[in-house]
Length: 197
View 1 (tube, one colour):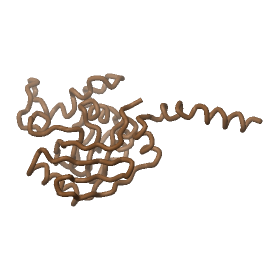
View 2: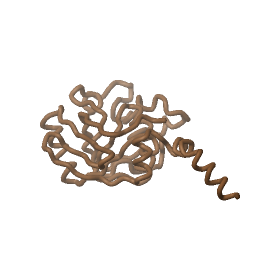
View 3: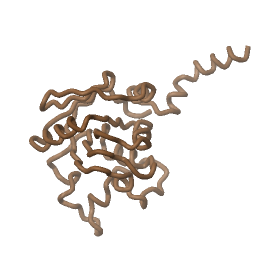
């Protein structure tokens, strides 16, 4: 069971870079682990820290200015290799939602399988959100998964977003694919009984 996602209102961390790939999200040298623990510590590792391990004072995750459960990213977020570890690193850091105008399909699916909600917005909404956060880091977004809407609370602008109905159900109930099957075990067993009569 994962943490359920319903309605999230949170401040945001802005990452206005395009074409951020999974190797930048979690560098390949950290992929040896087979459990999800500790990946958040290495999210954007090569941008967050110098070669000596000292924090980069200019990188957004090292600034006290920004915090929250929502990462707002530039276009084409999560491209590159299909590593599931990228979603582990983002959720491990504490993000529950990633907002962008475009996600790589594999990253999008890996995210939803791992309790992270990717929200696709128009380029205009994304640009306005970045502008709102820059003007006031206390700006919040409200992501309403049941109604599939996202609202910039600084401007009042709301957009709808698309999501696969099955994945939506899993995220709202905190289930992954295996949890979902287990939750429906009785229905599956009843179907099997009827099918073999």
